[in-house]
Image (cartoon, rainbow, N blue to C red):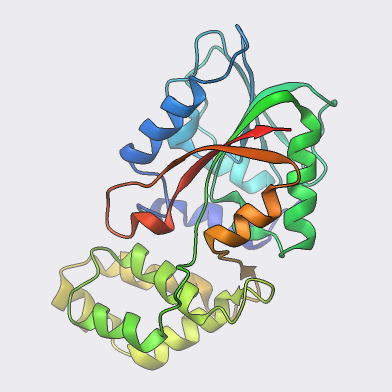
Length: 270
């Protein structure tokens, strides 16, 4: 699996990542409420990735938890254990999960789908999730969603300079979404940095103006020259891809700024 990759470097920068790129208490509460709908008496749960906030959430009583991440470095630097007695973590590929068919009752993830190309590996991941879930099993996932009406990068920078964006992390995702030509193409992180650097050459001045820690603002330098691509589908694009394998049961739109871009959706395996 991956070592010294984008995610290997990201693991070492993880403490600079803030909400809502990481789940907020609102998001965790939503995941906890949705997880309660699992019908198994001792749920066999799968956590996609090693997100600390999710691992530490209140899982249904009797949960057996397995976390799977494809990066050894993320496991080493980000895994902090879980809030269940029976919890394990392994390295594996989400598109080819190291699990038997029909072996999980619940799958939980946070922003995991942004790493796949759309629609090919996006669909392979969904097929993998569907394979390991029992019929009627639940998939609860927080998606990073582009708005149906795309905004321009200029609009994002105007809002940034005017202090109309509440956090630098939200700004980064808004800029990335605005720069994405289509979900099929995704957006190259190096291009996000280049647009940022061209528009805001003096990061220190901006951090002082908006009263944001300089180390938070300069965390975007991690994207410099990166060829890694992320995708930000619209809600309709997610629903189109998911439909052959899952039925949508419930959607949670958080109340924080930009919450419509960070929806947690509960699906049932068909």
